[in-house]
Image (cartoon, helix red, strand yellow):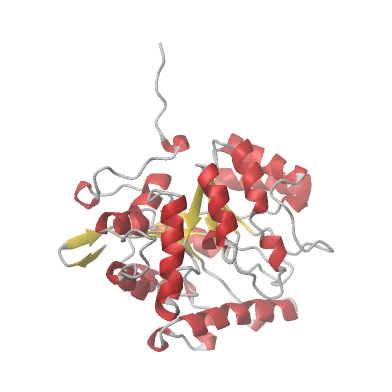
Length: 343
């Protein structure tokens, strides 16, 4: 929880990771390129005092994650959003077993989301069914630009992707997080295009699609899709740190999201460990749309409370103390609503 000026904010960091990018785990040059690109984002968009040494960034471990998020970072609950990247890392980039073990050790603080790649076909589908049971999955994080053999990406509306989404529906995995945003070296920018979100959001209205990085640099495309598809949400990972380096750009992002979507479908994310949540939370609570940007409405305290945690809590069914709620509370996604008996 974060408190400022007599207001208390329940914080859900909706996009965190626990990775191993050390040279020993890098399968090839692309493993180094990927983590170096992450580090460039970290170094160029963070305040100087929040910048980590490169070696710390390669591998930080669970204890530091818990301290950065929950002791120093004001976070009440965090959600793992892993990346596989098996073509670049010997033991994968995101550390599944270690992250899952942390969720078992701190069940009230952490939620584990998984990852899959539909290009694994039937074998991957069977694995997803087994993993859903083992990890009690509510959500997954998808990387449509990930490499697989000769393939350098896939589309959400590919036939095999539909098979996996149908399995998600069957297995109760109803939160589909998708990296649709800035490219990361050596991945291809166009493989992160948001256009394929439109079709699956229409065809799977019982699933919620959280578009991580809110489609940047295709914010306008994302907003046009999200305003038509009520089951499409915006994740603020990567958008948040512009509050430091480009505050007017950040104001534009927030203004557009609030204009086209609504205040119940935007989620705070630090994208830890690219950025730590503490300074992002502090600056967002202090932030306001500049007075001369009159086309955008001011950010109210209640809107900030929803974005910083109440929206993700409603989506994931995370308990929130009554005194930290706003009136009215964020809308609950259809799949989260209790069944109603009909006579």
